[in-house]
Length: 379
Image (tube, rainbow, N blue to C red; front, top):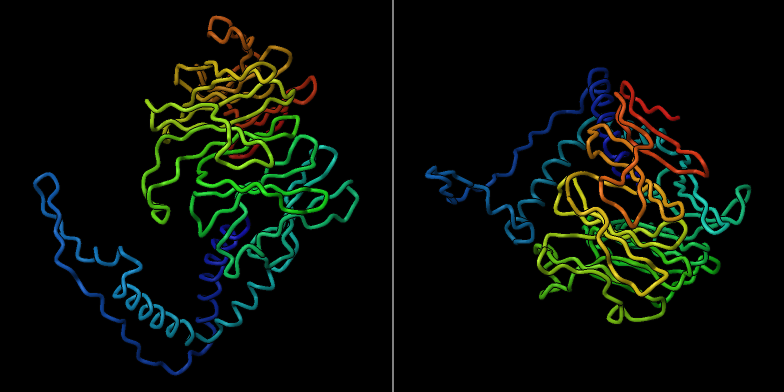
């Protein structure tokens, strides 16, 4: 979670310091470097009657022997030029020193336990810690720096059960959107047998009894090595702890809508599963729901696909929803879950001149965040 920001900052800072260093210091004796040649192919595409040359199409296959040779030559050339710059090592030492300090995320509480991320200063990945009290030093729960030797496997999500005894976590390899899910026991740190694959663009939602969780996945591709193929037909499943993924219960699929995707959310009272339905990158969504106290039946809730809808909370049979329906800058509405039609909506927080960026329901109050003159305002 720190690596991307660090890289951008290092690049900008290094450019500034490089200018200062080179302006003040004498350069090493110049060495003549010649850029390696880049062969041009004869690929030409015809689009709408126009011929467009693409002479470097051959470089798109990064695993081809010729491309690997070209990359190695370019790296040798680039590193040779950079290594000849006096002051570069001091820039690296200075930037390393500036970044070498502890960083913490905001902690959160689940089931009487506390969780937070910590980076000791120069770790490639922040480490997840847990403790029984806010004053405890805490212990390592998940260290993604141990996932791979080269640091390319990341911790891409953590979802703790309602009682804080179990945690689902996701691994992503080399920046891919594909995830694998694992489950561990929080008290012992031991990895359980559960291992789920072929997951992409999905969150996780535990049932409050801790018996399992909802998640969405795709069917395994025909060629498991071809992870770049277009994926369609996401399905929502329920996984019961200790069982094989092949035994997971199918909750929702829409083969007639292959571009639809699903994100599960269990309300804080544990009674209702909300299923957010998205389609591509559209800034709109639909919402289904399931009464978890009865036989699981998926029912429509907000299906017009005309705006964004995000459920803030559920009190009794009433939902509180943040939406931009009829309010481009956002508002909060409420309605009975059995009567979700617009005619039954009541407005709780109206739209204002300031964009509503976040709302939380805490006890009898709403914590409201708006954007005012490029900064957040909380009320």
